[in-house]
Length: 406
Image (cartoon, rainbow, N blue to C red; front, top):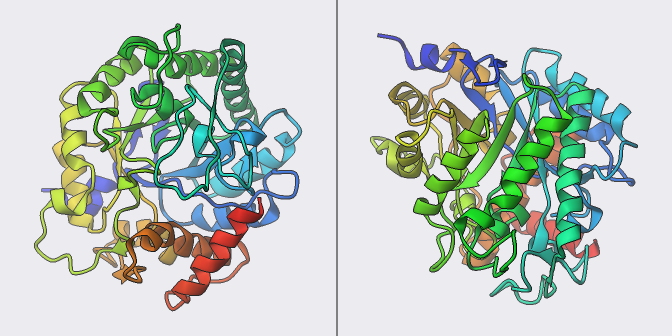
């Protein structure tokens, strides 16, 4: 009977033939560490050099954006041409020098690009965000030619990642960003080749996969982060996700990361807690999207990645050994314990350290669940250690002001 660590230490061979060294990934988190020209900064390289020593077999970057007006945050890395290729090579080298595989998460925020970045964000249709207190402008519906340009941009970004030596790419098709908006019947009201029914709503995603394949190589991994559901009435459903997964499998995708939610219904951020009072809890209580991963696993042979809420080595191993997911992702735990995967694999710890970032005001807690942990990322990028005692209110104010400045 293998130990949990032995289960997680198994290599994973992807459909394209590439291999991940083990079953633990550093999941994507927004670093907001682009330089003044939105290229990879020295701080970003320092951060990933540290995570490259974490023991995780796979490192997913935060959003790398294909259009400056489609940023999620002002300091995202932006790839709208090849000017940052040398910096990308340094980024890949820094992250992968100890054997981890660095994957670039490629995205466009669409209507979730804030007013500090653009007053008129782009979207499938002119459907604005609700309940956001004016933080986002009313979007403009993309024209057909603009969509074709964006497809080319996604392909170009993947080609640059491949040329720079990254281990793979992931299309961000979740969390309410542009690709997810096209998939959602709540946001995509088009009646052309890019919307109108489930098949046409996923046309953008499939076109991006095709463009990325053309720009890279057959053995270069391409993954997709996909919502299991939007958790909104009339939105993207688990049944919709199954249809998309079948299409992605036919398109030859290599990995599907299961997630959920968007800015209006932020299921992906949880409650800002790390493993608090987990004792004999079930895997379903610990892992936010396990039920959906199990449903999708029964529908596809494509390897799945499960991220969100995972804290204990036993639960992670049970998920992998049971087949619900081939790889598990850790995000916020690695902002406080950057070497957590190595410690789980060598048996020196069995779960992430407990911590809560909540202050008791729900709307603020949703923001703090991202901002407080991003400050820990910035500490590591500056060569410092994480600080579990970092003030919550101060972090919240600094994070909100940074995004408002644009």
